[in-house]
Image 1: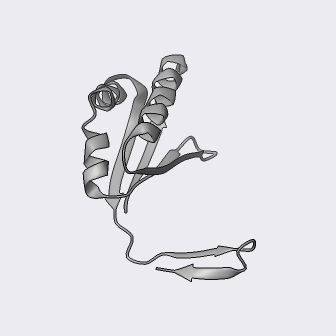
Image 2: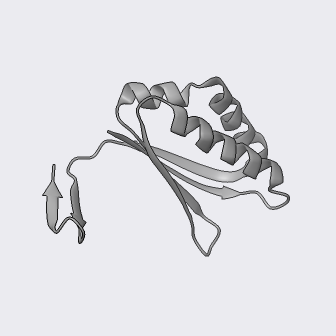
Amino acid sequence: MVITLFRNRLRPGDHEDYERWARRMVELATQQAGFISIKTFAADDGERVSIIEFESEAAHGAWRNHLEHREAQRLGRERFYSEFQIQICTPVRRYAFSRRAGQAAQD
């Protein structure tokens, strides 16, 4: 599994075009082979964090290099973000708990 942590802050102003691009990127990501999940959270101070998971580095790389995603990256740098930071990670260990399942899982 490969996890991308995408921390960012939007530039002030009209975010309508950004939201359109963001929806399209989620739509495209979910259609990529090897896609697992994406979630985005916003903090009170304006920082946003997206967590994107893919099955493998190959699947992650295909997403990173998708032509529309490349255009969104360019627009992000030029128009949408005042700052961003991207970290690409692979889990060292995974733990999970679900009350419904009634047991913890460890990889």
